[in-house]
Image (cartoon, rainbow, N blue to C red; front, side, top):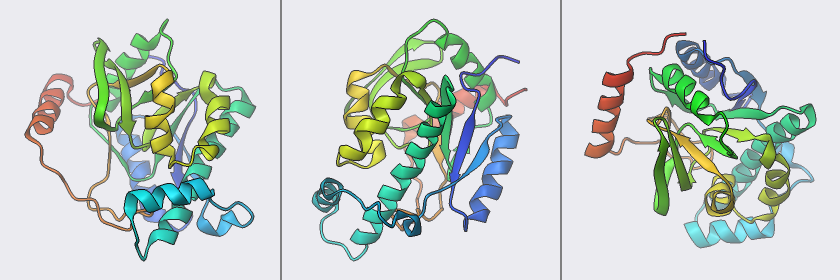
Amino acid sequence: MTELCFEHAFVINLDHRTDRWARMTESLAQVGIAAERFSAISVRDLIGDQPSVALKSFLQRVDGPSPSAEHKLQTTWACMRSHLAIIRMARDSGWPSVLILEDDCEFEPYTRTVLNRACKQLQGREWGVLYLGGTLKKGGKKVAVSANLSAVSRIRLAHAYVVNASLYERILREAPESGLPLDWYYSEVLQASSNTLMVRPTLAYQRLFDMSDIEQVERRPKYKTRQMLQRWWARTRYGRSSY
């Protein structure tokens, strides 16, 4: 079995979302990835650690007036704190990298096969973040650098990514002060000046028909012919993982 590009993996999961943890446990087992549960920081845990004024202003500009604005502000901040807590633990433990997953993540059946190949192709290459999935925003780039890796920028979402130790300190220092949600900080700040890669084909998606704890809306499928063809081609080529 090929050595993966991370020794430690964690799933961020709120204590009351036992349903999501159960689904993640099953999904991880199917693709042969071992990950520990990380008890997510909740809004109740934020006493004495309130969101920055800059983040509040940013969300007001992006979303406009909304009855759920305060809820989104608090949960966005708590989400960032959970991600940063894992990165801090990785830094303090001296881990060379860490895989961070959110509990609404779903994997393609060929995840282990492609991930093995991508991690092998990482050897000898400088990198800071490796995305297993994400959304390419307008103005971003996605350029193939090997059979299963693309150099990317302006990739949004943070449901499945590996952080290299070279970026631990920078993320911990910059993200809380950026005035941005964490995935926006990654896409608009970090990726512009770090070697960010993404596995190709995409391995991890956010689960559909699942209520977002932050947005408070159910994710619905967006049928795009190109993406559907890409997924069909990848499943035909790679089949199911073997491990």
